[in-house]
Image (tube, rainbow, N blue to C red; front, side, top):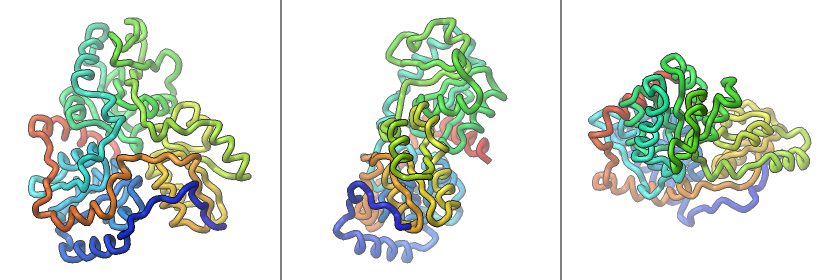
Length: 359
């Protein structure tokens, strides 16, 4: 069975073949001194140039454990690159091909808001028993806040283990900025009803009563990913109607009802592993960023792999093979990404907790 044709083609640069050839030439010239990290959501051409391809957790782990490479070029969005800059050695340098590649979800929580919310929490409950957990999709100062307050960084790969880690140390979890990953993880963990509350940082005390905060085990920040909240149960039903026997996987940043309607939910790493285990002729509909689904379809032409709907992350899409080539050709003068010294120590604590927690 041939892989599906995408609803509309993924745009390819005119000089894609030339760019990839030049990038590989530079990689050969620099040898082990250079490593290119590429997130699953990068364009197919950029993905083909990556030495390590993975989700945010695995790429940050690769940055932390890279031994020979001095220069680390990270093809992803800003929060991933700054995290890598914290985790790498002092003799290593991290570069970002496009510093304008940010993350709207990360912008849904800022340090002044979090500090105010933490202060308000302390007025109605004992914050010594509250463990702050910041999603990887966040700015470095929030990771530093978590490190300073005994917290941890979470990814979609290790969320369940992070919940274990938290409740070995405290009685409540303050999870930000993605409410959906937090809620879906809490649901799987067995929490329900009044155990879970939603904190709106734009309202005093999150819009919650003192009793709600005191009863809650999981306090979720009001934030979301625009890529993943686009998927709905109706799209899943439509895929099943049109393709008999199809399975459905969605990312845990999707809404609670969408996750409940799917056969499975998991990180981009989970999705890729599932596809690798599929048999020829198997069918799969996926609810995540379209460039990853396009790549999986191209790599597995004997399986039907389709998106529930085309949902593009414009920030991940900003990095092209042309951008990567330009960065590599000018690496000696390209501005490196450096962590703010005032944030690095505590951010590293939270990130190291993440790495240790996931094993």
